[in-house]
Image (cartoon, rainbow, N blue to C red; front, side):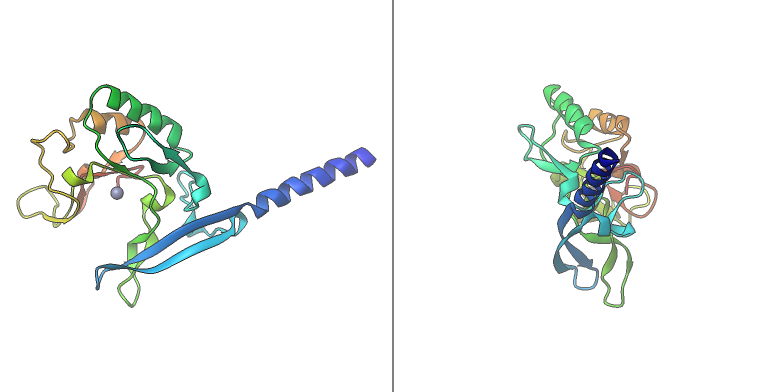
Length: 208
Ligand SMILES: [Zn+2]
């Protein structure tokens, strides 16, 4: 009897520790009218109080800093990515760099509402995949994000990052070893997504 009471006490305590585990993150929202970041906010709350929009249903990764792991591989500047992806991504990047592949800069976890419908002020309402640490940008200076770009041509409009030039080594193409290695991890390349945008720097589970 006493033993089962002690066990019950331990189980309840463990549950309380888990429920009390805190989540923290800093976020902003993108305003499409002023083309600026607005609503800068710092959030601190128990994991148990996270809402559906703060967790990616596909991977289980959340917007919380506590779900992110830092990857530091020279010569890349350290960046963070969700704990679910971090170990395999680290191995893949180490291999690519040791093979001399031109990896110059990777950006991973970065919380912000830059997707989805806009509200009455023109402000985006959904977290990007970078917010959950499930997307990376590779060499953004040579792999820009283009709009008006169903198929890549001279009419595509560069809206972020640097010009994509498949003739230079830092720009990614469907044949790049970097693209193949990241696809092997289950990531899709934003250079091949369907729609009006081509995001040549971007990789995520769905490519968006
Ligand atoms: Zn991206």
